[in-house]
Length: 257
Ligand code: PGA
Figure (cartoon, rainbow, N blue to C red):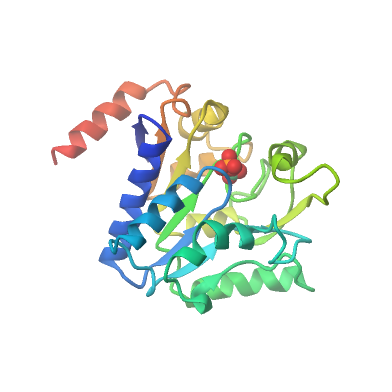
């Protein structure tokens, strides 16, 4: 794991954007795995800015989002498709036919998940997968106790996740309790994982993921087995790590290589 500790959320977003831009420059037809939630919003803002300055084009790329709520139409205000349209898709030059998202209202969710795995495979696999991390250590909607070998499937959200996401829904609005999510096994097959964590609410999950034992209790800890996982953290999210001095030193040394 590469642990990069940065000053603040803005530095995390800029560093993540650099990794996206490098990926797309070296492979213009990259397959990108995308994430939703509060954390990646700053990154998407930087990517849109770089696109508008002519420093980035995504027109050769394909994208696959990690997850979608069950029971929300794509055009629903709180669907992840709406989120992606708002924060990224409608601002850049991705071709609509290369944007892939799970359908939360599919008649047959099991078939939908299987077909999603097929589409990822047919696209040649995911080159760069963006991840956030839940306060409970989830990646995508792979909640604690998810099989570390799981594939794309339907998942019951924990009360903790429902509570954390309540802020996005008004009091009288239907809030989904199920989601379709790429599995942990699916995520582990991506060629480069880029996990972003900001804020002190994530400090304990980050500690467990980086320095705890690998366990389904903290799904993100499985990234210790990933051959190429980069974690970009702000100081608050990194505040419970024990080996901070080593991570800073290693990054400093890397700069001179
Ligand atoms: P957040 O969600 O970015 O809104 O904190 C992250 C996640 O749950 O994966």
